Image 1: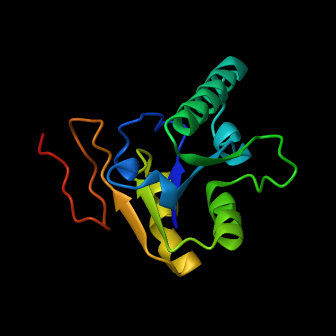
Image 2: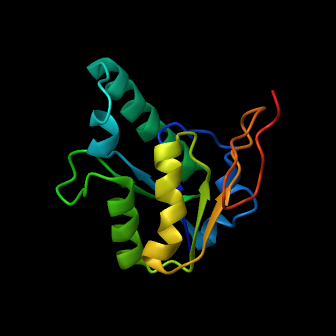
Length: 147
C-alpha cells in the first residue's frame, strides 16, 4: 500500500503524487495540523477557507475512487504536525512507501526529505508539476530554472 500525503496548498486532481497510482492500492492522507495554522499569523477566515477547501477536496478525491484518511484539526488523536500524522499513519497502516508532491515551502520540504530516514520506508518526492518554475530538491537532483 502507498501512503500519499496531500498538503493544504496541493488541492488539485492533477497532483503529481497521484499520477500513475492505482487508487485501490493507496491511501491519501490529508491533515489539518496546528503547526501549519499557527507558525505564522493568519486571519481566521483564511484558515477557515483553507480547511474548508481541504475538506471539499477530500470529498472530491473520495468521489473519484480514492481512499482518504482525513485528520481534522479537532480530532482528539491529532498530533498537531505533518510528521506526527505521517508517523501515526505509518504505524497504523504499514505502507510499503510514501509518495508525495514536493512541498512549495522549504521548511515543509525539509520535513518530507527526513521521512525516509525517520520511518524506514522509501519516500518518493515528486516534482510539483502545477507550476512553470521548480525548486531544486536534493532528492531529485532537479535544478531551478535560470533567471
